Length: 410
Image (cartoon, rainbow, N blue to C red; front, side, top):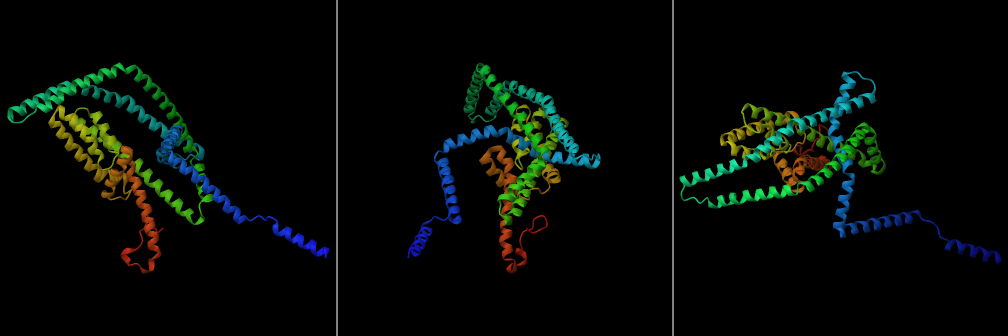
């Protein structure tokens, strides 16, 4: 009897004993993580102004690294080309030496262009701007003469409103110039500190970009390792293909558009010298920079340039407008397709949509990056459509076969 009682007590102890269950433990851990991150997200949303300020502070701290990554991304195609040049043409066997020479050559080329711009173009731009400021009184007199001529030819036309607007604008401009001169010393101090900080950040960004270019393969391998470690196996190939396409779209568009705009700016300068139009350097820089914006860029740059020339000579302004129109046609029909090819694959309607939406979201930068961003979104949608169509491949008519990317089905 005692033995039976002992066995019963042992059974009761085993029943009441806590036993670990991995399944419930995992559920508890996931629940804690969901509650924790949910609380963080709710806190970030409820104190949105503080969140934005913290994001801005974080971006300010990380800005040298962001700029460095952007510089490395832009220079990477040039570094890759120089690397192949030193390895294949110059027959340099050392991989490290080819990489070092490629990075040095790319930076020397870019720094050389910047030096030429600083010491060759900027003084010309400053001279042109000074001439324009000095030309303001003459332009005002020309406007008065124009209004007098209008009144003589059309006596019933009332130009008093326009005259009063100009008379009020000139004193306001003079007062603004006086206030600006009075605040010049504090402004110069603030600008000097900003320039010093900017130069320091730029130096850090350049160093970061050099290290990123030198360690490009390890960085790419690290990113791939993260994908292989945390992404489900069936999505790994998809992530890699989408990332490669995003890189192709953005790099080919940015680099190609930069080359295209540089050529257009140089051609504009040469044509303006041939046609003997004034302010050739200033206007060519404006046209070259705004040409980075697809479709509307040349016309955006032509508007202020035409206004400048209109005060000097209406005939020269008309000649300039015709020249820009011809230059834009040459860029759109010949030069652009040669350099960019069909890098985005977007129709004109979608390019206009990308520029409009991108400009409303992020200004000029959004107008520029909106085109490759929309092209990438289009690529993702096409992949999704392609995936859904492949599920119904047997019942599809021939004219509704899935999209093809680069000659292969994904």
